[in-house]
Image 1 (cartoon, helix red, strand yellow):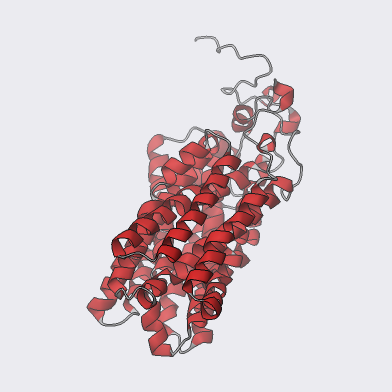
Image 2: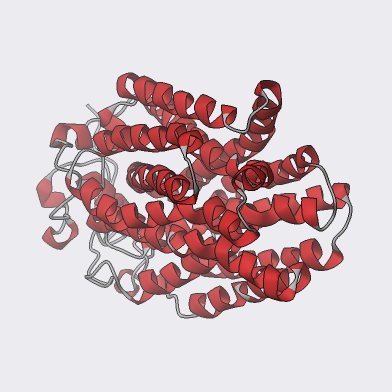
Length: 451
């Protein structure tokens, strides 16, 4: 048997699982969910199990995105049937994120203590039932309740999914979460295009909600049998701790999960949610009412946001290699400039598709995965679940009212000024918050004592 390879001074051997090889301060007191046994955490996971598990989890998030994105292009028909105003319609278009926000922090605590797979399965069933119930609403109140219920399940799923993926792929957290972002982008592409077609084929806007709700229940059943707990329950073990920090210790980081870095990133996340969902919720209405495009054309333009979101792999990959603070600042500035192109230029369909694509690239491809992964890096490894919950709450909570805010701004100022304030000026608040972030205190940083 060959001898172990020598390690550099101050390094912890990454191929050893011996407790003696890791400083006591480095071993998380709560390294994973209560449902994940040590053999699940430490045993090597076959590549096929990882590939299938990640594919199924990504597919479940794609269906999640389809559920979210199908409402906006159908909003004009829904408003016409129920007699909703633009502000009420905008609130319904983004109100589901209120349910996500309510679920975020509690779900983060749950996934730090219990089986992530169980939380995932329950959450998919909840948001699918909410989607199925939406066409049954008799008025604004019922529809809002069903949308919030759907959002609650989506928030639970997001917290569990982000925590599971972030903990398992701790070395390439940004890239892995970027892959999840790609699944979201595909859902945003498929949701509007397929949803509008289903509505046309069946002669009712209700058809897509029934189809997508049933699809979610099918995904939950598939995930129950194919997503291995060896992947979902694995967390930052002694092996991961030794490989993540050059000293094997995280004493250079704040002890609390809600610290200067995580709070500043939560502010940036809040801005990102208000900007992105305010845009997504009323963009089709802007195209139809202001630029006089058809519902099908507006769905096509919206789908290009999803195509841009496919840049999530690139955005996450870059975020794993450079200063994430600088990357996020650049992403928010790019979103701001794109807002000028969309609402001030008010170009034709072809240009709008390009501008929507850019919004997808910088909003869902770069900003989303990097804020998500940066918040997880701003806390110690045993607090990743709470960081994922903080992201979900901060991103989706204020986003619930982003459509209402945008609709009110449009009513008071018109589309140009509304776009200027909410999509162009607001991202500058995130830039100011990001200036307070210190990446030297991230859990993937090399602490000064290691030099």
